[in-house]
Length: 419
Image (tube, rainbow, N blue to C red):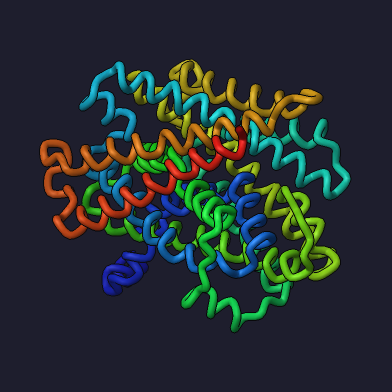
């Protein structure tokens, strides 16, 4: 075959084809984190504080890369998911309670995603009683009836819709000089509201479900040890793209809503407030981005939870399996979709309280999961030559220490404000 001989003569082509075949878990996981809660947080950061928080996206990107790279390395080195490794090395009892907490927290997050779907479609005059059930049915069919390859392709295609936020940011006509100054040499305001928002940005960027989902999806994809470098590249690309999107969401609101002194409280408010300054098309693009981000996460979060719980309990799991082969996996996924979508349709349901509790749960869970990860990745019996180097370990522990401190601060602030 002449074409195969040509490829063999050009190693760059081989590397490109190999990367495209492996690409997916890292990019998908990082981008899904720009969900309804993330879009709301970034919108409020720009609307309330202008460009002054832009500097934070640089250390956040570095932290995200370090945490997610360790997950990818564990997946390739062990061929097992994170929940599976925790059960094998720390026992069933702590794993059970960890999975129970993750299930409850993620259920609250799924409710928030369907609320984001409802809010985004209401901007176009579409009732939530139509948009939410239809979207729930779509994501259920996609996972239960689809294959891993199909699901991954759909998710990668959905990532393209995040471009709408980049376009919205440009349409807002920001002061690029001021953007650069505040990113590189910021004037940091250490007031309590500023610190609360800073902690909120960190908390919404690195979430507990991400580590479980990325590691499980790499395992199901069947990536070999020799392809680790390609997996790492996939993770790095995803962990750079996601904060860039968040940066543009923040910038769109900073250049318009903050400059006009308008107060907004939700992502829907922010989308509608863009219209007088950046045009109706900017509002539509922002709303489309919110819808796709929410739908994207409404599919991934229950999937991540199903992977984690089934691995932790030793049950069969995987999108490529049939319902009868993995009833717990698909049953859990179905239950979370039904409950998450159904609660949004209940009049006067205390959704904000549920979202608050889930965010506090995220903040409590993350430090625990990161400590488990660091203990696992430094165990040579488990990781072999894939353990952290001394330098990487110093950076990783410092990063995890800062993330733990900030997430604990987030929980304290949320309890303080809620109380």
